Length: 80
Image (tube, rainbow, N blue to C red; front, side):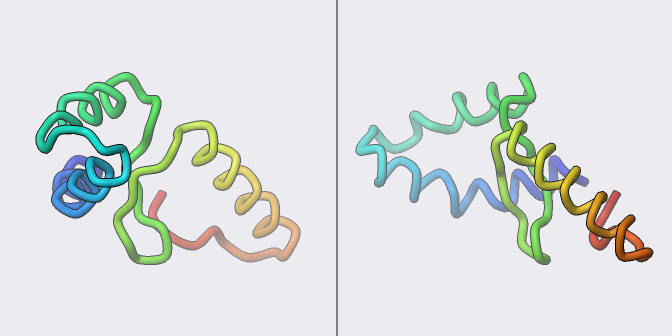
């Protein structure tokens, strides 16, 4: 499922990243794929939107959310 999210979101992410970074169109895709394979970035759903986020930030946000939910006595929102 995460691969589907990443593939869908790349259509929007890649052109934006290439414009912001001022690089040649199409040059970012292999780099993003490599980062996803190496686990440097993670494809996930955040607030019902597919996103690609830095792995360290992703882990930190999930840890904080889990602790807050545990303190509140609820369950963690979103997919596993």
